[in-house]
Structures are given as structure tokens and as C-alpha cells.
Amino acid sequence: MLSILSTFFEPHRAVSIYVFLKSWWLLITGVVTLIAVFAGLLLLNDDGTHEHHSFLTVAVLSATPINGDLKHGVVASVRLPDGSAVSITTTEGPIARTVGTEACVEKRVFVESGEPRYRFKLPRNCGAG
Image 1 (cartoon, rainbow, N blue to C red):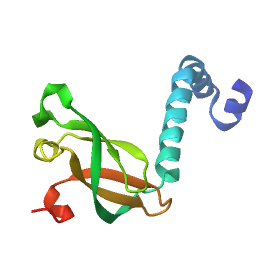
Image 2: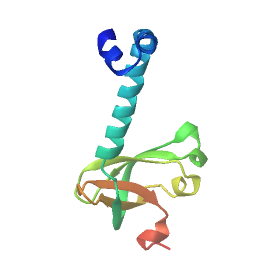
Image 3: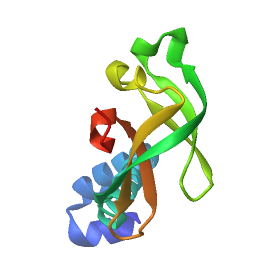
């Protein structure tokens, strides 16, 4: 490697570069690899855009307050209209307080994959008063 560096740089500078690379090659390789991984994740990741599909009133199977208090949120299992059950979490106190035997849920769908996501909303969005 020293002979290759000598063809591009003066001999004393080639030795300095060689010693620097011998000492720091692991750190330099790690940083370059880390940058490449982050760039790959940034460039190859889909944008994750999703759009509103509908509001649903669903039956609540079980609801557990976060940290024992609804002001911190709630984790609830709900029965969707298609018969499947899903667990939904909200950390918004006002919305968590509306989760009882029924709850208002917004269905959002990812644009590219069509995969649904659900989140609790206030009952007024589902048509309740």
C-alpha cells in the first residue's frame, strides 16, 4: 500500500498517510459503514403516507389505563366490524376517557401497501353527540 501511495504523493507524505490509515482504519471504516447504512435507510424507506378511510364505532373487549390512570391514556382491545380483534393505544387523556363499552376508531390506510391502521378518536367523529 505504501508503494501505491508513493505514486500519488511525495514519499514523506505517503508515509504519513500510511501511518494514519494504519492507526485509524477501523474507525474510518465504521463511520463510512454507518453513513452508508443511514443513507440506505433514508433513500430506500417508503414515505409512509396514509389517508383517512372511515370512522368506525367498535365494541371494546378490554381496556387498561396506562399507569393506572386514564389521564395518561389507555390500551384497549377492540372488535372490528370484520370480526377481528386489534389492540389500540392512545396517550391522549381526553380521548382515553371516552373509551367505554364502545369506542370511536379512525381507520387509516397506507397509500402504497393498503395496510390499515387504527386509532381512537372522539365520539363526535363517529356521529355520536
